[in-house]
Length: 518
Image 1 (tube, rainbow, N blue to C red):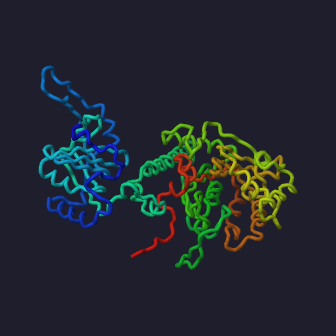
Image 2 (tube, rainbow, N blue to C red):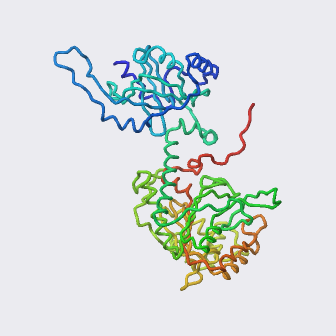
Image 3 (tube, rainbow, N blue to C red):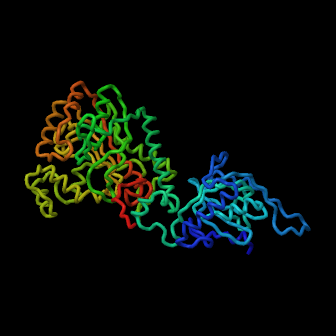
């Protein structure tokens, strides 16, 4: 087998089979940094124009021309001619054998092998190549060809040093296996853990798709305030802060809703915001104290308008990632083939609990049996808690759950035919709530009444413990009938990328303070 055939294809990404052992000291890297400087190179690099992404380079494989061996010739291998390319990336694999170095470099579009021959690059470039470590960022000019085994390779003609890595990459067999360490050192996780960078690039595609879909339907993007004088728009505990100059307490927003609806009053008929919201609550595989929310409001629509919009947003996001409607989820498969199922809240309650959704006595008994506190609670609140415990986990979906009890929906318009039912839906997939939408309540008197009912008994530290009087005043100026939607971006990305925890789709999730051992 030729040396080119020994190109370490089976060595895991980010590790070398030779030159660097686990725990290699920083001193060795600093010594190479000094040698790079002595060779006349800046070890921290400079502007490097004209490089193509590795994905684009790999797409040029068809330009390689192989000339057949002439009849009667003693030539042992056919001659190849390929395009001249320029690439830049991080060294994630390296193997030296005599006067040859094989290295893999990776950028955010892919990975490709380099062939560095001492005789091909000359002594100056070879001396530079001998200073390469795993994790270094390098540039290369060369010809794109294939090895004897067919491996697409850049045969280096000139090398460029772009940045020195003073830290060793993760150890070959163990790597960053501790989830907290991976999330804390996301820069290392992105660089070396297989699949992490593509996942976050998919997240960007999903968010861009949502903006494009909304824009195509006439929605305009706006930015509401992050600091609120009143915590409202959702039932959640807020983070508190204080403005020194004005000497006033403020809250980080827990929802985007009330300011966006003010814009409906002002004549902005289709508005949306993609923004961070903050809730001072627990951390779990499905919850992070700060997360990304889409809220969109459409004048002259209703919750059914929002169902159609939600389905369109998700289908377009799937298309943006290049996936089909059948998506893996752990050991299961989610079928996003439209149209998504639609069932009423009461229908699903009865199906999954075996209790008539209208039988308040039986529902209370069921709640008592499963250990829920029921004393002093409205029957619909008890019913809602039973739904959360017994039904939601069964909703594999995607399924729109329609028509919630009105008493638990203070911002929602009631059905004209049945005021006990609110025109609200939630979208569930794999037992997770992904979206929540209403036909928006625009009656200022009823809204004020419902706020006052909801505020009764609220703890002072909880959200909505104070009425947003200005929002009521805005409604008195006339808000058009409208549909409103809230869509959890992080949970949607979880589902579309087969990520089992929310921390896997948030670049920098909230972590405990790092313990210092030195």
